[in-house]
Image (cartoon, rainbow, N blue to C red):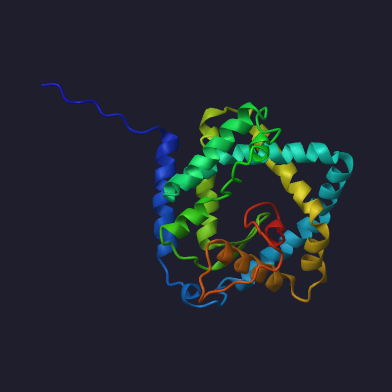
Length: 266
């Protein structure tokens, strides 16, 4: 008697499935006071403050001077092209997360933008999709996917290099390392091109918003509390604060992801 053959999914897919399952369990496991109030849930504040001081020292000694030097040496037009290229490389991950969120409209728009900018825009170096009036990218992540699935925000945490986050978004960052299909298609060392473009784009942003970031990190009375407040207000606003949960967005369209502390000011 012949039995039907069964093939297990490839190892990267198994790792992704396992991470998604662990992320949901971890994000939903503990009570979350921040769900019911606008208060900050920061039980790890002593450790977070220590990490904040590490990040601040690293920014002062390395990130800020490198970012200023990078923007001084690299022409603005080249910086813009590198930023477009980095954004285009992030679209496959956005598409995956939009599908997981059942946001099929966003997935369709991002797919169309990816196809146009990758072909007509020479791999994303140019942005003909915007010139054609196509919607902007969804700019989503697995932290937002967890939110859509009902996972709790969890405690506030400050991550090394990455800065402000929450437990939910920290799990999201970990899973997003595997959600971009390009990580399975493009082999090393070519895959390092995308990493380099992302770092370069982060340096550009650090330089562009230098005055605001410096004011938060080095001029405020309590830079840790300031960074925490700005990040949480923006992230909750971005995830859809309702009429009974209003979050001010003091710096405009802030982005929670990126390099050291830049999420506080965009």
